Image: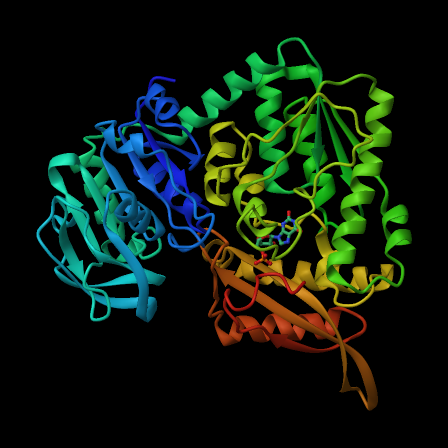
Length: 510
Ligand code: XMP
């Protein structure tokens, strides 16, 4: 790899990959590396700049993470963000203390003179999330931004190329946060910005080919975008030495399994085995109502099925999985709590004997995965498809999963997709689906009283799926969706619209 590199030094903050993807969006290749990396190892990578991330700890607490102090002598520009600013201050002789007023969310800020803030409106807002602040600057530093509560909201030592901000420019990116990152990359680090996603795809294919050599690979496919892109990447790398096992658990949307089979087998001549095992999955889900339990069972059954089929193929060395970054973070990292255990990250049982797992998309966000998919030549209908959770419709049926409920939900989901596509809205929405709420309500059909299912309609707009806004679908479209669901799905008496954002809700109901 001979392109420019920015290193994001990870102190455990929840936005570390978001920083990385902003940098990649600006055309500079970027990698997230643990804070424990030695200055020597970073130097060997010859980065154009280093960004310190935020982190959940206080620099004054026991076991607070600190980086190798030699990093400051590398002569490489550094930008500290949040905890990264505090760590920089502390390591260089400044002071950090508990802030009297904790700032959270959009906060008024005044930016001062600095190359970092070139072109940025001086009277502005920034995005804050901190309990500590820098209370005394290290020697050689000056303050370059302030808020009402935080005098030292940013600092610099221009001569040494050291910059730091208490706020999160990567979160507030549309409101000149991007400009601040740009100033760091292009003004201070002097990056050229000519890296593209196509380079990632090419390099990832080449490095997978080199790693796999003449060995065999299998890939677990679930029917979603991520595992499809990962599979295609491996197909490009090793052709027929790849076998894809498409475990169709019967929890997919209408028509989806057939489409995946057609594209991979017919259009791309990929070695693909489709295993239809709805019966086994439903059998194991009888009476299970707890969402995490459903995920675990489906994850386990998926692996078990996969393992059974894999054994028939014989010895393989590598297993490819389509894990993407939000799966990793939401399943909990060393420093972040588990929100949902995504089944494609849960890990494989020890009984499976593979030499190594390859997760080529592990650092990417959804929209980046799509760009890779397009680069690899996958059809837009598949690549631009909205994300679909590994456990499928099972986590959109609140309560236990039965074949009858699945049929109702599959039809309702199809109606929703159909209406949104017809109205031209589908492209503007990032995810939309129906949920069988598990509640029943009284209705009247003809002259008869009914007591049937309530379907919830969920639609969100988001760019990274870490946060999302509920979509404002016009009432007439909602009306058509509701009318058709009640008329065409037997057993549905009422349709409601979910108007919560993420956070505090998640996108899926379970
Ligand atoms: P949440 O509900 O956590 O969803 O806001 C964020 C994104 O992740 C998808 N999702 C999953 N994907 N396995 C997956 O592969 C899962 O268990 C899972 N749960 C949620 C969800 O559809 C959304 O795009």
